[in-house]
Every structure is written in C-alpha cells, then in structure tokens.
Image (cartoon, rainbow, N blue to C red; front, top):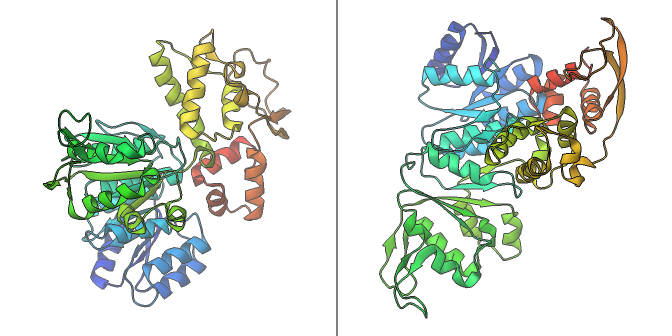
Length: 461
C-alpha cells in the first residue's frame, strides 16, 4: 500500500488518536487538527492527499473545512465523518463536494477500504455492476460520487430523487439501487408519468374497483400496490398532474391510498424513487409542482451528469454498448480509430441513449466487422473537428496499414482531430499555473485521467 499524506480533523481526542494510530500503522503520514480553524490553517500552508473531517466541530464546522479545502485545492478529496443514521447530513456534505462519508462509530476495515479507494491506491474502474442489476459504465468523478452515494442509501428506505437530462441513464441508477437494497427480492415497478394521459394517471398509480367507471369490469391494482415490498420508479415525475400530486404526497407521508371507486384505505410500503429531467424548483415557481411534494421526494438527491460533461467515459461506454448491440444482431464488431474519434468530438445532446442508438444504426448499416465514420449517423460522422497541430515524439500507430515507423527519436507533425480537447486541457493547465489537481477539477476529470491525457498530448513538463 502506498503512503498518503492525510489530515484528520476531529475534536474528540480519543477518536482523533485512534484514527491517527490506525492510518499511521498502514504507512500513511497523518497530521491532526482538533478544530476547523487549525485545519484551514494547515490546508493553506501544507499539501495533503486526503482530508478526513468530522462535520460537528467547535468554531468552524466540518462544512467550513470542506468549503475551504475546495477553495484552496479543488482536486483534494474530502471524506466526512457523520453520526450514525444521518444520511441527510452526509448527502448535503456530498453536494458541497465531499467525495464520500463514514458513519460513526468508525469501522477500521471500512476506513482502510475508503482511504485506499479515495486516495487513489486502487485503480478507478470503468464500470459498476451488482448481481441482479445493470452495468453502469463511467469513471468520471461525478459518476463515481453518484454511485458511492447510491450504494450508501440503497440499504435504507429513504426516497431518492434522480436528476439529469433525458438519456443519461437515470433508470439504470434506479435499478442498481433496487438490486443493492434489502428489497431486491421484491418487484421493481417503473411508471413513466409523461407517457400516461392525465385522465388515467390516478387509475394507473392507485388502481380501481369493479364498476368504478364505465368499462371497469374487474378490479385492478395500481402501481403502488403492485410494487408493495419492492421499489417504485416514478420516471418524469415533473409531468405528474397537480391533482394527483396530493395523492402521491399522502402515500409518501402516510403510506395509505384508496383505489378509484373505493372508500377503504389500503397501505403500500413501496420504496419510491423519482426521476426527472426538469428543474422542479422552477416548476414550483410556475405553480406546476407542489413544493411539499418536492421536498418529500428529494430526501436523497442524486445527479446523473450529461455525457458531454464526462467525455472520458465516451470510449468505454461506446465499447460496452457496442458489445451489447452486436450481441442483439449476432455480430462481433469493433470501432475503427477514426470512428472512435468521431464519437469523441460529438456533443451528444441525447446522452447515452443517443450513443446507443448511433451504434445500433452503425451495426445495422455496416457491411464489415469494423465500424467506420461513414457507418455512423451523418450528424456524428459529419461533426466538424477543430484540428490542432502539435509536435511530439513519434509513437507507432497500432493500425496494421500504418506507414513504416520512422527511426527512433524522430519527431513528426500530427493532427489532433478529437474536438478541442487538446486546447481545452492546455488552457486549463495554463489558467491554473499547471497545477494538476485544480486543472483536473476545472476540466471535470480525475487527476489520473488528466495525467494520461497530458502524456498523450505531449503536455508533460
């Protein structure tokens, strides 16, 4: 295990000493602070690889330490210590930029695993999967943070609000949460609130009794009843009619409802996950969404970032999705380097869903086992690159049809055709005086990924 410099901020002397001994015993260099003011002074004058801070401190709070750390060194990971069961507090800390949290009393094995992962001692994986759930591909820090939070809240019954643009994979997160939860043996029921006419919404969610209306020849349970003991995903919750929102709020608060045409109350213990691509706070201002329902839904908010903001995930996502698409078509296909570059320079307004559809199209029209740019939809293959010419040491091309290798040490002119990534990275580095942590934070990528790209583009000094 490699050594990391860790700042421990904890006002309880016994716990502070225990954390110091445990981490020092693993070979880490540990410094401690008993209050927020001392911690902020140390952060301003010394370099650390990780900060571990309690939230409740005398004077400056743990949130103040977190905010100060983000201001002084945006790329420095901060883990917060919280009292047992205070998931809401931990969520708020993660919204402020904490990468993870530990509940007290601290389990030493959990501490070691978390420090190893957060301090970069275990390689970041490109995918996340759980038995009975989907595979979620992504190593971007925001994706990993969302997945860590998902893992933590899965074992609770807290209501989760998934936010993000259409096509980002919110349902995959919901299914993964269900698969990780104690309710995994129960049903996972999904309802798209945007796909059901307003006049049928109440019936769809709560069911009806026989004779409740013309054509109701038999009783039928609603989604809340079907999802009993399991999980109910209410997708596009922002489209829920106002008249039905009050009934949903009642189920969340009292766990009771009535079928249409019935006076007897029924119970549902379904765990609710809501998802939306709308700004619900704006919908509240527009009087189209209830404020009390909004706060009842966002007990644990999890944001799924758009694909354009995590461009480093495009390549592993494309390979994963292509394998899945190829299996559906009973074909083994791969992407040519030029096709991959076309995917990397496209903006993906439709996010992961659009990427999968583009690959489905390419597999359908391609006549060979290799996908080329001309096999992709025109808006992707025709996206204009922003060429940047740089000089860097020659590295042989992996393509078999490449020209013969020049002599070792020869410098050659090459054209970077992968959108303005090179200029974006160079600009961020120059803006932040080539400090990698701050540059990585500004670019929305991990420090490891930034280093790899700097090496690729010849930007290492």
